[in-house]
Length: 183
Image 1 (cartoon, helix red, strand yellow):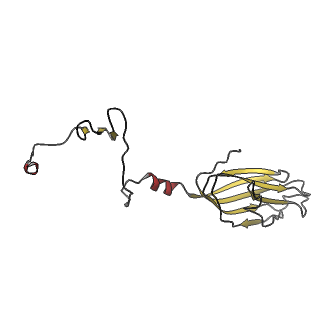
Image 2: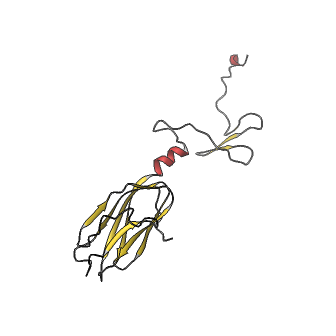
């Protein structure tokens, strides 16, 4: 019976352990441990979901923890910019709020047709459409809109009578890292 065999002289095992004849191998070198399916092909290790601070975590747990975070993106638009690209949001991003801010006296000669909205190609005021006030104030639109597909966001500037001016647009969102390069 194997259970009754005791060998008290064993002090350890080799740095290379083969699991069964011709089976996968565990190889250790300095501080690394590698798992091989055969002589030269690395193997995957399957683990259970971590439930304690000292446990390893699955890729899904890591993605859930790091993939979705609250971000604030700030862009500046000009009075004569027309449709200005802001950034691209990844799929499954929630836009929490959009704020437009100007400084007093910044928008020269604006009139009732001077306006800024923020949105996408389908709805140019989806994220901000509450009425732009170029008099030196902040306006915010709390939309909580979810983009299920990757989408480019734009500021739509109607110059009206304005002959100068800039506005700061701040978008608060929850999702993966945002692409701020122009399309």
